Length: 365
Image 1 (cartoon, rainbow, N blue to C red):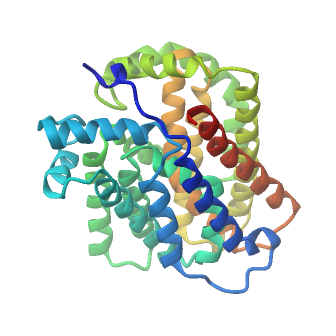
Image 2: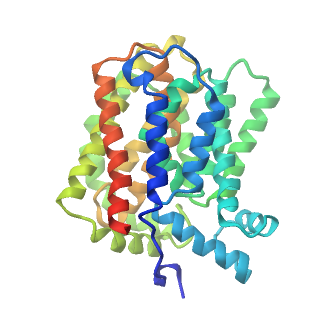
């Protein structure tokens, strides 16, 4: 019996805990929205909120799916996940699913916060953006550990002040991120593309002009991508299952909230990228590369959006883009005066995040 043959015990009531964490974070770091940040903040509290939300991610279906995988590994000695590292972790830890999740997502959270601190980004800024932009995507897959490791590595690789030895270790760390999720192969290849493409206003305008054409030819390469299994072993079958599970949720309300999400995403992207390009000469080179990398990942995500089975690829790239873009958005918020457009973007992102929590609470109650 496969995972998709199971009847999972989704728990709507438990999502109240996630909603409580969300509200605590919004209230605690509301000064960013108000444009009244006066302290640097404490990353310990940011870490606890992030790790708790990911460990007890009751609003995410994968939280329950991973419990199935955990049971297969712990109680039936089956390597249910593709990567051996998670089987090894399962065998080394006491029998507790939440402890297993904390060991993975808690480690990923540590890498992300260390990246923010290395770039001098204060907890008071990252703390507000996390619940409205980062928490949900971070909590979805185990691949977050690999993505956080990649971002952490990029902070060192493109920092000219770091010694070559540290930068070499960072390159090695980025490469071993593959062992935390097989799909990361595709995203490591995207690093090469980000390295050769410049980041300037001409490049952004050209990418927008070319988008309709690239979107039109996307379907012609989808089958080849699926056949290569570049995102994971069994990608094609998994994609078909994913689409089947999503079709029942395709309604007017779902499309409307997708538009809400994308409106917030695109507005925040526009504001942050405009800022980075305008002030590129005085911005940390790591931030510039991370911004370029995040833009490319989100761009590819939109190329595959709404195209039958290939929309599975869209969700994967959207997920991956969240990690570098969170760094960029936090940096952007800290280094300029918060304006009306920033507040609109934050409201849109916040409303979508609340919708995701409330919708699944209602659906699984």
